[in-house]
Image (cartoon, rainbow, N blue to C red; front, side):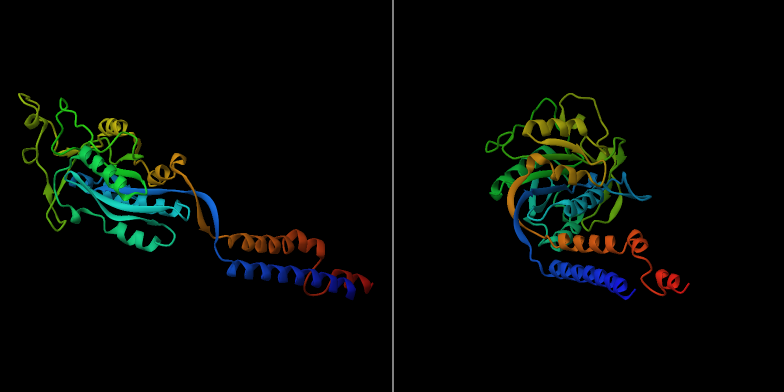
Length: 317
């Protein structure tokens, strides 16, 4: 019986020893530069007051369009492969400003989260919201960076003041359709909601009334249409039209995964070398080895590993 027991113990010992070696390799193996798909995006958030409309939910709590957009961007960071780059920008008035130029996501993950959390209405510099001009400015900003990032522009599409449909706003002279790639991401629901009014410190002080905002009748000469620009809903047809004009795609912010999906669009992939962590391979092999060796099936085949062996009890008869 002793040789059989020794043989079982030797097999267990060897399995544990190999597993320990694999775990040590996993602990010390450095990241290795490998070629894989990476992505570079400049995410622009509309921070105008209509983005404060609370027509999304987090659990059972109503949250604003901007808050939901930030959450979707936060989740997108977790999905991007190392070597990818992300930057943040904000839109208000008619200008888009870069808040953080695209940086590598794995090395700067904490900084990206910290800066993302600070993108809110308190940095708003104007109450106007000329979306089409803002898209043009975002394209210009991306072009000026020199690395040609993809623009992800998140907005509800509500122009303030409203556009005159008879006067098409041309693209800037230094831009061409398709020159910069990206997506317009439409935020908000289809049901018009009152727009919160906030002071310079971001405190809510009521809601905008119809006589406090410019209506279509104020823009179009001889028009008797008053409109309802004090209410806000997703202006999807307008955003789709602008996206087509500049050569962008269009997607709706329908879930917290929406921004990740557009950022990971395979058409945007760049085949670059990036440091890749491979520690999980030897760690997984160690787990598989121990799992196979000490599985219930292996234990039944090998007999009891502690206490009195069945064969020893049989030999006393």
